[in-house]
Amino acid sequence: MQASSFRTLRAVPNAPRLFASAFALGLASSFSGPYLPLFAVQVAHMNPLRLGLFLTCVSVFSIVISTFIGRWSDKLPSRRPALLLGLASAACAYLLLTQTTNYAVLLLVGGLLLGTGSASFPQLFAYARIQIAPAGALAIQQGLATLRSVFSLAWVAGPLLGSALLGAYSFGGLFAFTALLFGLSALPVLLDSPLGRKKALAGAPPPQTPHSLPHTNPVSARQLRLIALAFVLYAAALSMGSSALPLYITQTLNGTSRDVGFVIGLCALLEIPLMLSFVLRPARWSPASMMVLGFALMAAYVLTVALSSSVWMLAAAQLFRAAAIAVASVQGMAYFQDLMPGRVGAATTLFANTSNAGSVAAGTLFGVWAQFFGYHSVFGLCAGLAVLACGLMVYVRRGKAGRSVPSESGRPGP
Image (cartoon, rainbow, N blue to C red):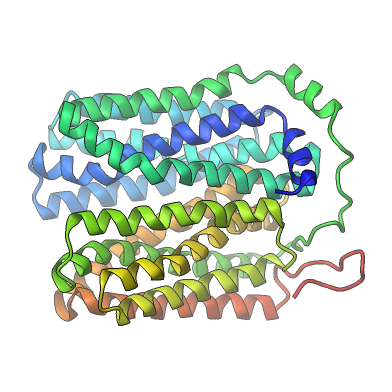
C-alpha cells in the first residue's frame, strides 16, 4: 500500500473502532444468515410454504423499515441512535430465537426485529462516511473500501466458525453468540467521542479539492430509478446464482459439501485484496463506468459457471464473481451516496435495499425456473439479468447520469 494511503487512513477519526464494529457485524451476519433457514426447518418445523413466507416477511420488512430509518437518520444531528437501534434490534431478535419456535412469534421477530436490524449495515457505512468526510474525498473512498473489506474478511471464516458452534452448542448457543456479536459491534459506536474526532481531524491532511477524484453529478428521479433497477437485477442474478451453486456442485458435478464450502470461502477470500485495491489505487473511472464493468463481470461469471464441468473450473470462476462483488459493493455504495448529496442515510439504505429487493425477486424466480428447467439453467437466467443490468447502466451513462466531472488535467473520466 502506498504511504499516502496509509497517511489518509490514519487521518480517519476512530478508524480502528469503525473497523472493529464492521468486523463484529460481519461475523454476526455470517454466523446467523446461512443457518437461519436451517433453524426454521429443523427446529421450528416450517414446511416450504411457511419458510418461504417467513423469509419473504423478513426481506419485505427489511426494505420498509430500513428505508424509514435511513430517512429518519438524515434528519438527526447524529447517526448513532439509528445505528444503535438497528444493532440492538438484531441482538434482541437472536436472543428471542433461542426461546421460541412459535410460528406467529417468529413472524413478528423476523419482520419487526430482524427487519429493523437490517438497517445496521447501511447505517454503519453512512455513519462511517460522515466521520471520514472531513478528511477529504480520497479518505472517503479508501475508508469505505477498507471498511467493506473488513466486513468481507469476517465472512471468510465466519460460516465455518458458525458451523462449529452449531455442532457444539446447537442453535441456542449459535444465536446467543450471534446476539453477543451484535452487541460487540455496538460497543465501538458507544465509545465514540466527538472530542476524539476533533483531535484526529486536527492532524489530518488538507482535504482534496473537488476535482481530485471523479464524482457524480446530481441525477433526475427517473435516472435514479433506472440505476436502482440495474442494481436490483444484479442482486437478483447474484442471489439466484448463490442459491443454485451448492445444488449444481452436489447434484450435477457430484461434488461434496466440502467442495461447496471451499468454493464459497474462496470467493470471500478473493474479495478482500480486490476491495483493498481501491485503497491502494483509487478508481479513476467514473462510478457509472465502474458499475458497467462490475455487472459485465457478473455476466461473465455466471456464463463461465454454466459452461464449467468440474469443481476446479468453478473455483477459477470465483475470480470473476469476487471482482464483480468488489466493484458493486465498494464503488456502488459510494455511487449512491454521491447521487444523493446531503442524504447519506437514505442513499446507503437505498443501495442496501436494492440487494434486499433482488433477493425477494430471486426467491420467486429461482423456484419457478428451477422447477421447470432445472438448476443448471438458472445460470443462463442469471446471465440474462446481469446483461440487462449492464445495458441499463450503459444507457444511464450515455445519458450522462453519474459521469465524472473534468479532472484537473481537463480530461473527464471514461
